[in-house]
Length: 219
Image (tube, rainbow, N blue to C red; front, side):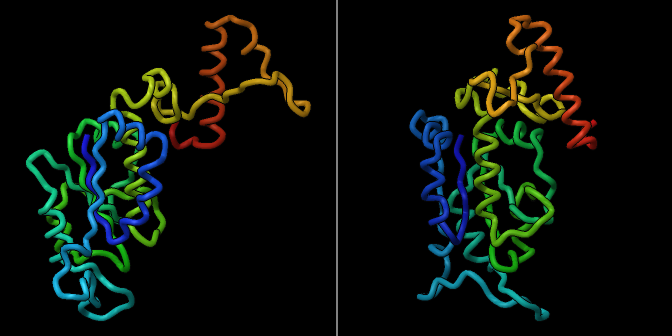
C-alpha cells in the first residue's frame, strides 16, 4: 500500500515514520509513506499557501492552486483521495477495513480556517475522526494511517485483530497478565482454569457487560 499525505506541516510526520507499526511496514515493503509539502507547489517567492476568505471572517483559507498542484503531482489512476475535515463522515472500524483494500490513499490535510471549498470536488470522500476541532488534518492523517495499516495483511497477526473492540460490533473483554494478584486485585479464577470453552463464554459475557456499561449505543 502507498499512502501520500499532503500537508503544510511535514515536520509533524518525522517521528510518526519511526513508530513501530509504520517503520515495520516501511521496512518490510508493505507500506510506502510519502509526505508531500504543499508549500513546495505555492507560486511566488514567499510560497504563500493561504489567503483571507471572501466575504470576511477570521482565519486564513488554503488556496486551490498549491493544494491541487500538489495533489496532481501524486495522484494516479488507482488513487483514493480523502479530504480530512470535521464536516466529513465519521471514521469507524468498518471505514478502516474498506480503506485497507485500497492500493493508494491520498490524505489532504486542511489547516488554518480550512480549505477553499472548490478543493472538495477533487476528493473521493471526506472523513472526520470526531466531533471536535483540531489545528489541522495532520493528526487525523496519522490516526487513520495507523488504523488502516494494522489491517493490511502481514502487518500484524490476524488473531490479534479478530477479537479487538469494534471488530465484533462490541467492545473487547478485559485482559490480564502476571502477577496473579497485585495490590489485592486478583485475576479472575476462570482465566486460570484451563477450560477454554468456559473462558470463551466468560470473555463474551464480559465484552457484552462492558459494552452495555460504556457504549450502550453499540448494542
